[in-house]
Image (tube, rainbow, N blue to C red; front, side):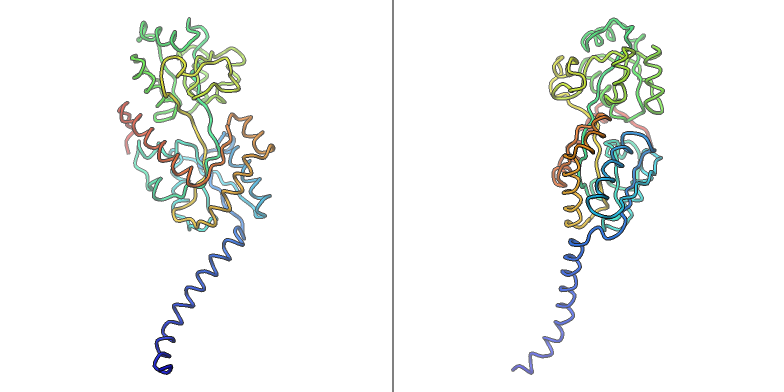
Length: 329
């Protein structure tokens, strides 16, 4: 009887060994990650908010996890170059991606070589940045309602300045115009600085952009804030009412910044990164630095970030379709 079972037992030995090896590797990975330097791809130029957030968190992760987290800026093509590199990298936790919310908007406007939901693992939402409506102070409009009334009365004389087609500011302008029942020319710029300079000079009438981009101008009086697109008022601008307060329910839109890895990132690796990021977003030397840039820290779990990302994709997709915005291939 025993002799008859031996051949079958021998046949099962390689399978058992493979299972044991897999379990051992998984356990070892959980215990040792990271065991070598981690590459953090920032799909934006150095110096901006995305870069500041990435470097602040990377420094904390390096100190916490004991391996270098090396930030590499790979900008261009609406952040798709850096994102593509990460999507095509090994799902081992040694190549990560930091990007703003534009990352999920771009594929709705142009062809990209990846699917945000399928080709990436959402690891954590670092935080959100509120956006504001700013107008040239020469305009006789001290509130959003007054600006809308002015735009309705003078549609040929009023203009928006936008940071680019498909930016969060641009999408917010389109939604506000649709809900408020007015339409004025939107002038598209290549970035925030030229649009803001023209707003200060009076060459455009108004702009919608993240609060940090205009906070110094608000303080100097060269741009007048008339609304913020948040659920509650922004602590840096407590006197400025929300868009919702001024008659537009559920008008909550903002920029946000997150961390992704390639698809199929091991759960234990995600857990290690998640735990460290959650701690980072409660550590004053990290939060003080990013808060100075206007970021409201979050540090969400992977599951919460994935759910949030899905909701944001649905929201932005509706805004783009409602406004019939197209860039092309």
